[in-house]
Amino acid sequence: MSFATFEAELTTCFEDKLAQKRARNVIYTFRQGKQSLTSFMDQFELLHIEAEVSQEEAYFLLKRGLNDSVIQAAFGGFNVIPTTYTLLVKELKTLATNYEEGVTLKGVKEKEDRLRETSVATRRGRLSRS
Image (cartoon, rainbow, N blue to C red; front, top):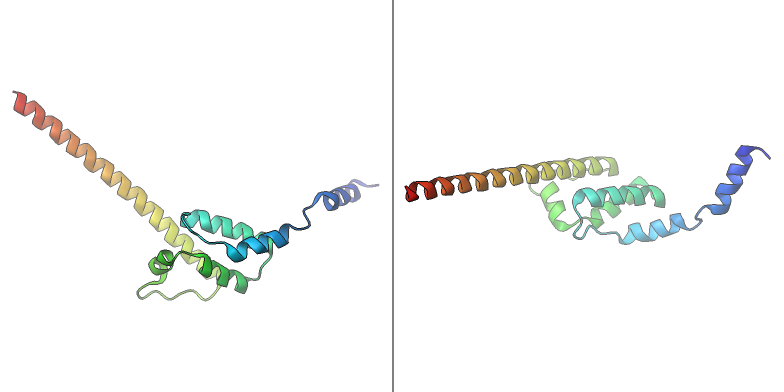
């Protein structure tokens, strides 16, 4: 018996024969909920691969699983909703990146403002004691 044959038999013996079916069940009911967009997208991509759903089906399931606020943020106003799964994923990943960078920058700005306020209050305290 060659190693390749042994490896093939071992893989066949231990592979999860229901993994694809379970992934299909999960992806059909998968919703973003309180997850971040990035986390949701990563998990959806894994399910998409595991469930082996078509691009068209994945497009429908992805749109259905997103929170309304994400759809509104991504495609509200004058934006056109992408018509393919690949374009939709690209648009959503851009949105997630921009949002996370904005949150990070907002957090830095808020921290700078708090430090500035603390510094001003400290100086005022020193001046009033003099």
